[in-house]
Image 1 (cartoon, rainbow, N blue to C red):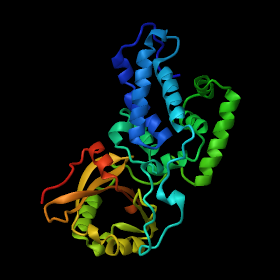
Image 2: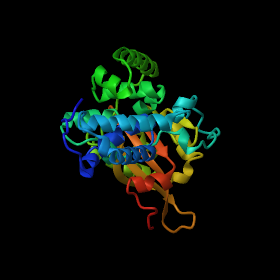
Image 3: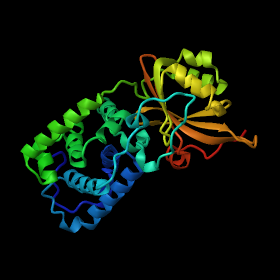
Image 4: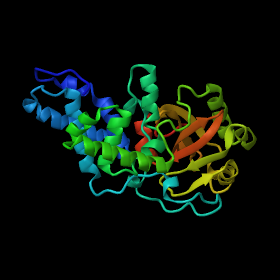
Length: 327
């Protein structure tokens, strides 16, 4: 496995150096940045408490991944998978019911790039972003937890089958079988790590600036030129999701008309894609209140997908967004 063998007890700073890549791993396993951070904190705490038993025969990195995997498997035990609205049912009419508000644990949650995208070679950074896309993380949740770990370790992190077998205390044949079954399940979801969509760094800055101006002006004509005809929109924690630009506009001008007059503030990239904090006018007329974290998938010169995450009390602090805007 990667990492040099150690002959002395590692310091706490050496453990901390692995935090970001472990957080990315746990996020792919768990589908929530909050749970991922909890899992990594537990991992590092367990590692620190066990350092007196770490003799350096295995790489520190490998040892930490073993602990992190066990933490994630414990957290996933008996739990339903997280999902996106489009995983739970067909697209709905823009003038129909929005569906139930489902518990937070139902949904894939967005993660800021600073938590889960590793630094380094540009090609490695690009691959890291591809494997934390919302759709890919959602597809991983279709896998049983151990298959999920096998696929991430083998296909995303490029570990050898023998290394994964050692980590999971199983055989190489079992690892290869689990990987084959996991690949078949992912193929059935028609989602890959290379799912279409430009990274936040590669998106045309002018396109995003025009989107912000058009959305704040609620200019449907200008937005028509920016949004793909077959675009989709979802709004966790509601079950509702929409397919097609016409239905999206039908929602924005109908049940979602309260978004008129919103302010849109760029923030840290989410899952490799551009993200914005949306603030709606306060009912009191005094400033703007948080409404949604918008995450946009941009492809083929236009916006292909909107995800409006409405859990602003949880997500705005994570993305460094203010709790409200002055008028």
